[in-house]
Length: 251
Image (tube, rainbow, N blue to C red; front, side, top):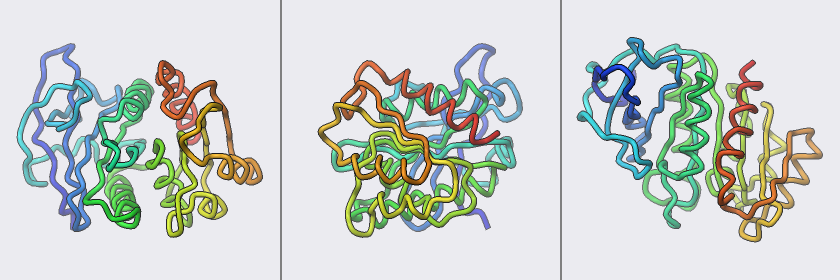
């Protein structure tokens, strides 16, 4: 039984940008997410709007309703990418500019994006459950699901992708190796879907070298960009690469 909540449908004037729909992800933790509709859904019955609660500049509207009040427009709809934010104790959230940029590019290609926040800090353990629950939510509603993350979120994405057979692709932007119980290098050996690893050549924040080495050994896509950990001024370039990867992964 679906126990998540969604925002009620709001009809917008022609030409208005559709704000993201707020989703409360089932799973026992307070995990909130913003669902950005791909361009293919704009102007159809799948049109959705709601409060994002973040600072990505998108208009807030509507109130959270029960599942029975929600539109079913996204159910079974093509493709979606679940996007994981950077470290929550360092200000990371679903409104991170790199996640928003990637979501915008995915949307232009007709791919929905679910940008998630984590529940209460749990040393990486609960955060992995949060991502898994978001994937379960997406898998019940979409034909194909991908996974993306930046920094700490990239580590979570790689760790959660290991051992799963229901992902079309996983993209990791500036991943850090992590720690015991959330070791992205170990996880890479157990990922069955295509993987993209993007890192900054001048990144002195994350421990990315062992991840890149293992990814190359495993035949995954690896690309170094002339940037630091935060890709200042290059977020659109990064987003385009993420969009291209998922477009190919979804086929």
